[in-house]
Length: 244
Ligand code: PGA
Image (cartoon, rainbow, N blue to C red; front, side):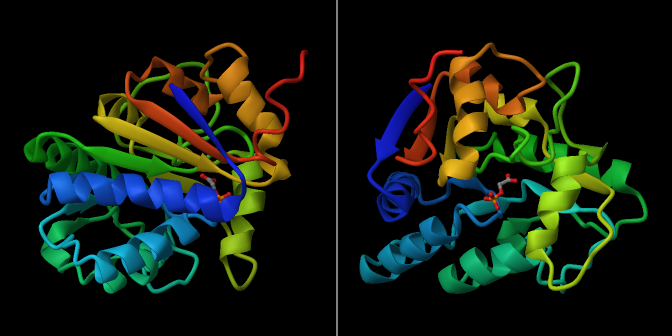
């Protein structure tokens, strides 16, 4: 795992965006999994601007969804669907046949999971994942647990995820379960980038980066990935030198 500490959120976003652009220039049919969330918003805006300015074409890329809230419609502004269309697919002009997202309204979420696993293996695997980190150390909806591993699945959301997740919704929303890629997908991706900013993430970043690798801090698994990068601003990195 490589650690990159940037001056601020703008610099972090520029660096993450540059990594995605570099890949797509080199491999125009790359398979990308881009997380939703507040953290990567600026990354995607910068990425879309560079794509326009430098004529970098994402239309041949395949996009894989990381996760979705179960029971939430794709029209809901808090859904991962809505986010990705707004920040990524519309600005980059991506056609629907290149987009594979979990259906949070599916009557058969287990089948939805197997479908996603098959799509990923049919593509030959994910080239790049850009993910955030939850306040409890989750990646996607891989919540703190007794063991790592697994592929796509439906999960009961942790208390902090339900609480923090309200920030994405315009009104109080019942969030109980999510559907997510598994940490095996992360480990098997050719490259993984985790972005985090702000002092509120400093303690969980310290745990993920400095303390033991444990499924109780799911993001710590990135240290078992041979090509993972953690890109932070100074505030998120501020507890890395503290002894415990
Ligand atoms: P955030 O979410 O980027 O909105 O902080 C991160 C996450 O929960 O994965």
